[in-house]
Length: 204
Image 1 (tube, rainbow, N blue to C red):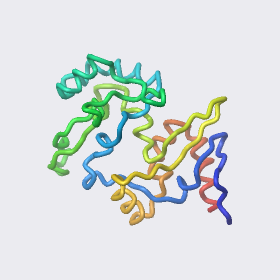
Image 2: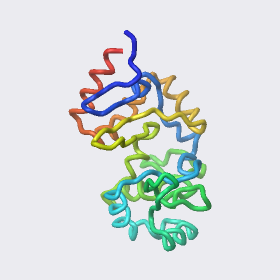
Image 3: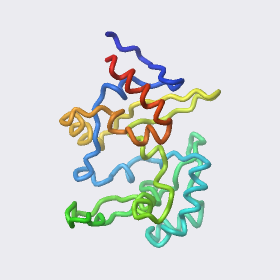
Image 4: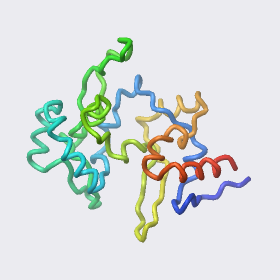
């Protein structure tokens, strides 16, 4: 079956690569470098900015002094060169909510002991301290969402050199992007939409 260049799933336009390409974050190798690389912060909605501001007091002491200074000066987000709201960044690189730390130990005491870039928002959420985990744009990566206006939304698969190990791990596991991102896709579009996506994926 010939794969069309764009698929319409429940009114959302998606790139077929989301169904055909494989991906699985390999945190032990990448060390969370996606929180650092790039020239802008993570895309955020106005509702997410409000959620982040609500969680700010909880995570404030976990942030670096440089991050605190940036937030004091410009807030938790700013408009990038395209006019989109993104999380504030430090030194033109890392997200203000990223810290280079040794990961918290698992209940068994096992895990990576080397410093990694960790999201303080996500860590607070996983420790039961806040109700907000992290921007959906972070959770959905390597999918990038594009709003075309008039309610039209598109989803594209984004290739990034720093995620080479994630691509290789995904291939080894035979794990397509849409399956790897099952939870955030359901969080964003709902269970019924994801079920429809799976049905479309089964056709290829």
